[in-house]
Length: 521
Image (tube, rainbow, N blue to C red; front, side, top):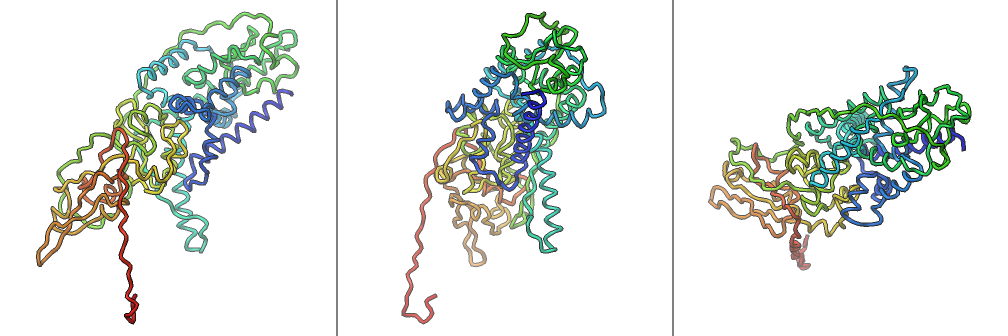
């Protein structure tokens, strides 16, 4: 097989994966079935690794297949499967179209690469996945599409639906606007801007300096069975391969290819006019001088301004309070998504890829700020000011690639207690304004929040909420519906470890009909 064929195969496979990944994160209609989602995410390295560590299931061992492929053919993951790598190729192709020669050899920056990988591993061993979440290419790609592009797609869909509906065209319909989390958007922009700049100017330099997955696979790729090598006897010295190497790993002056940085794009094989470059077994390679080490790199620390708070979703209050509430909610723990089991397990496994945030139809899942602590930045949490968890919904349970959110069947999910609703009487409009409300009870699917007599006079009869904590599942329907501001009269306090709620009793209505009457209905 020629180099041109290898390059065409690589472009076709990578374009296919990129299109599917983009569609997965932009899918606001949940068109992808759960089986298809898990199949697409099987080969994503970090989510598969974390899922395997916490679940020890063969079905979560996609990272092992990636390691085997790397040991055989080098870093093919970086060019065939990694969505952020493919996005860099697109940006590089557009941004570097007018630059000739396009690329040139770059120093290997071994110290910088190993330092980033070492700090990432040390963070994981210390119980913090923040650095991995920030640098994981799959999660970075997910945040770019979920936090930046998805709101634009939803906006375009809703505007198109508004224009077409009066014309009798109903193929499009309006969907809920995405919740904007300023902190997550700021971090995502701080990732996208340098990645895009490096891709446009220097090809895959980000993959070979900052990405810890690229460094780890590069260490294995050094010993890969099949590698690209320069045949000094057949090489014509034209330098074409060096100019198209987006990894900057071909050094014609010394006649070597740094296979720890080669990402397997096969551009060099496609442009070589003769047999100067070959892709064959490593042990056929003649002894050559190792590449000269570059000067010491260093890590430039940047600080992202954490301004703003998570945006609030749309609310439709049934009543208007006469004055602002004064007693704040006493939340002792954030609410982690259903299927996560516990806050500790969730934060240790989640890579903050935001696929669940994109898939959530009620928009209750939003990127966190410091609710989980500093190491849990951007990991999704339940924000009941933005929405509530639909009682019948299991979408997020079937899309998580890392196993941070485990699948639950519908009945098990309905009995999983994420938290317990707490009622603050002094904030309730029934107490403050002597007016009926009942929005919290109306939105409670288990009737854990029910109304009890509060005032019974000839002039007025009022009822007020009461919570049965045993059957409350912490879905947040009551908190989302509560109209009081700035503090809610009812809110959900999260369970650090999810509990099992008691199944609510179903009351059977007396439907006895007296057929002796003329009109029994």
